[in-house]
Each structure stands twice: as structure tokens, then as C-alpha cells.
Length: 332
Image 1: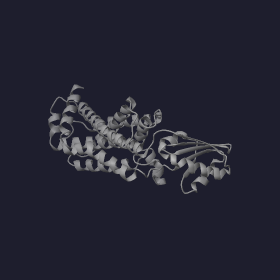
Image 2: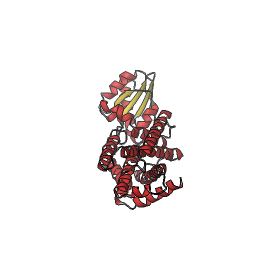
Image 3: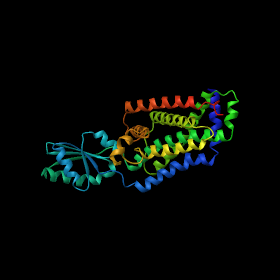
Image 4: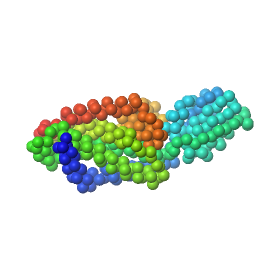
């Protein structure tokens, strides 16, 4: 293990002085965050309403035809919370309970007025309560954290190994006592450190945008697990590539990263995807990582065990396969 730690330290010193690496660690996540924050900061899906209670289907249809709301029949208040939607519950046509994101308080009055019109009850008792601290910026920041574990994990391994192979540094490592598993572990350690550094930068941008995340050890654990998973994927990609055609690994990494990045819930809700892509986006590894990150740093909800299980299994599979394929002494 000592060899892995020393190699990881050497890789860190070598690459943090590289301008290309600094771009992916610092500038890429910052540019991505600011670009989406500026373009889509006011365009998130804040006007979706989950409706439950008396004559919910009829009320949902009425609200959807108002031109202001997109209403869905659902009693999933947690789902509304996680997506930044409004949630209303009508009891016996006499009382209305509205839960809403704090930034959408101005929507409560028109929503209540529409419900009163639908029920023909001007004396409807209305109780409105803000919940959570969801904003598009918080949604975006949490999504970017998942994206950088993907991009740094895949690009990092492919980029470092390609560069070391091209400069024949891998030959020197192969001639040393370093074991193949120590080589792979050193790359994983390097990627974890890089992703943590990038996450600090992204969360700093979040603070500047008014988002105060709730951080604990479970957040670090999810970040490390996601990084290991995507680093393992990067190792698999490079391990399957003929070493005389390194450009193939780099091309595959680029295509895969951008597909996984944009067909996910990183930047906007899955509900905004075309129907054909919604299931793919919902269960993308990036989306699952993002859901877990959001549960921790935004919604303060317990992690879904099935999500944790899926990521754990993928991590084991990718790391095991990558470790086998990325053998230090099979580079010739």
C-alpha cells in the first residue's frame, strides 16, 4: 500500500502543475456551473404542482389548463420536495394545505385562488408553509458535483495513463517493484483527491449564489464512491484500447462522458426530457449519484438503499474489471 500512496503523491505533484489538468479540475466545473446558472437560473420547473385529496384528478386538470401550473395527481410530498415542486392537499373541499419552495411564495395566492374557483368555495381555509431551501442554484450545484466525479474520474484515468504511456513513464514504473494493483489504487487515490478539490471549488460558487449546503461524512462517502466507480470505468475504457491507438480511448471517454452528463438530471429535472429518454436519464449512474448528493446536501433526507446498492455494485464491477485490464506490465 505504501507504493500506491507514494505513486499517488507523485501523480498529484506531476499533474497539478499541468495546465490541462487544472482546466478540468478548476475551470471546467466553474464554467459549466456559471454557464447553466446564468442561462437557466430562472427557468427551472418551479410551476409543477402535486395535487392530492378531494377530487384531485379534476383539480389537477383545472390547474393545468390555467396556463400557470402543470399539475400532477400525487401524494408524494417528498418527491415534490426533492424536485422543487409545489404540493397541495385538499381536505373535504373546505381546507387547502400548500407546501411550497421558499422562493415561490408569490405563487401561493394565485394557486389558492384557482382552487377556490374550482371548488366554488370563497371561504376555503388556506394553510401555506414553505419547506426546504430548494432553488435552481442548489439543484445545479449538487448536479455539478456529480458531473465532476464523472468527468474527472473517466477523463482523469484515461488522460493520466495515456500521457504516461506516451511519455514512456509506464515502462519505468513497470521496471520498478510497484505492483499492478498499487498502480491502479494510486490512480484511484489521485482521482478522489482531484474530485474533492473540484467539489470545494463548486461549493464555493454555490455559497456565492446563496446556497448553503449541509455537509457531513455521508456526502464525502458518496463522493468517494462515485469517483471510484467512474475511475474504474475510465480504467476499463483504457484497458480495452489497443495501446498503439490511445486516441480511441480518449475519443470514447469524451463521447461517453458527455452522453452521461447531459442525459441525466444534472442540470434539469428528468420530467423535462422527451419520453423516450426519461427512463434512461432517471436511472443513469450520474442521476443516481446526483439524487444521493441532493438528498444529503439539500433535502437532508436518508439515502435510498437501492441507489446506494446500485452504485456500490457498479463500483465493485468497474474497479475490479479496470484493475484487471489496466495491468502495469501489459502495456507493450
